[in-house]
Amino acid sequence: MTVPVKPLPEPTTVTAPYWEGCREGVLRLQRCTACEAMQFPPQRHCRQCLGDTLAWQPAAGTGRVTSWTVVRHPVSAAFAADVPYVVAIVALDEGPTMLAGIRQCAVDAVHVGMRVAVVFETRSDAISVPCFRPADHC
Amino acid sequence: MTLRGAAAIVGIGDTPVGKLPGWSATDLCIEAARRALADAALDKRAIDGLVTCNSMVEPHVYHAEMIAEAMGIAPRWCMTLSAGGATNFAAVHHAAAAIAAGQCRTVLISAADTLRTGLTPERAQAQMASTGDPNFEAPYGLPVAGSYALIARAHMHAFGTTAEQLARVAVTTRAHAALNAAAEKRTPISIDDVLSSRMIADPLHLLDCSLVSDGGAAIILTGADRAGAFPNRPAYLLGAGEGRTHEHVSQAPSLVESAARESGRRAYDMARLGPADVDFAELYDCFTPVVLIELEDLGFCPKGEAGRFVEDGHTALGGSLPTNTHGGLLSHAHPGNPGSMFGLTEAVRQLRGTAGARQVVGAEVGLVHGQGGILSSHCTLILGLQVARS
Image (tube, rainbow over all chains, first blue to last red; front, side, top):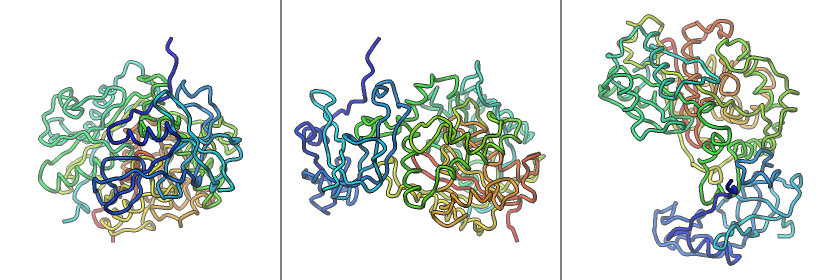
């Protein structure tokens, strides 16, 4: 019997710098050098102006929870041991929004508007995924 | 050019629903088509247009062509459409445009799947969750119910919507299903039943979530000029509109307001009607919070007030806007993307006056709305008994 594994991101030519950042403990966003839009998730073209000259910029790593849920019924066997776990949408201070797990926090203490700071969770030698912890002082 | 009144639904067919061992998705798609043809007293050779919705269980690269082959028909206009829960109504929109443009005369739209017996519960769950971004969402283990829980939580936070109000959607819908012999779940439930059912993803309980079913349904759409020649009263397409804002829930511009606003406005504009003209609605109800957002975005109540609107009984039979009169995806059946077809065939039944114990008295204008993804892709249709309502 195979051990269930959580879905593992696969870096591409475009996203490799993002995943390298995560491994090094830095959350990186794309900034369009043409229109200055900040972007996540990373992609080759700017969503605003379709320009293709995007630069990498470290994010502050802080943001605010816009919504959250406590998953009680895991999406797959790979997450069964984590139940109950919190998944939230975080609006980064730079503007982009992302889905992420909330860590270092009781599941019933999460709330809309909660200030959070990024932490990284190691999933493999190459991949760490960003999660967030409470940071009411931020 | 307007599509207002250009086409009409002249045939409908629903398959049985629930657990249908021994039936493939293709079998059900053709069975639904056969029933719709019989309802329209139409020979299959009259079908010159075909739209299908791909099966999750038995995906085909050329799905509509495969169905045409298996039905022994050779449509000149043919497509497999993919817009999640908005697929079937977008199909009606496209088909009406094709008919108006003279590309075809009589279109069969058929959709079915076997999510209940064709997939293990684990695979069904994984299939549905696969709409999440594989790199930036999937690593966090968010089930589809969890995505809609994010929507529900945001609505509660913004407007004070309560778990009881969400539960009321499920309770009202079940009461309607109790009047529909074809529905999968017919035993009435209470608010307490919903709130004491297993928590899946806070704040959504098991009974806030739709069913997982086998089944399908089909319709026949033809030009309004020919619609009078069929045995049943035609249901004219008076308005159609679509709207889209995003695909992934994490990229939604709003969690409490959707492109149903645009799809609804476009459909009302085409029909030259407004929410007050609508006698009943069949709204996509994969999870209870979706109905609240649709009621608001389609203009049936102000933004933020759908919880009270439902609580006050407006959406129940006998209320000002009977909604999901057949039992919806919550209690009739939910075979995945084909599921909204049951709302469409129900709307036609209501307009014909053949809905039996759940008939909306004096139903002349009905609105159906489908949404796919996580409030991503929307299509609204307005159907009526007359091409122009005075």
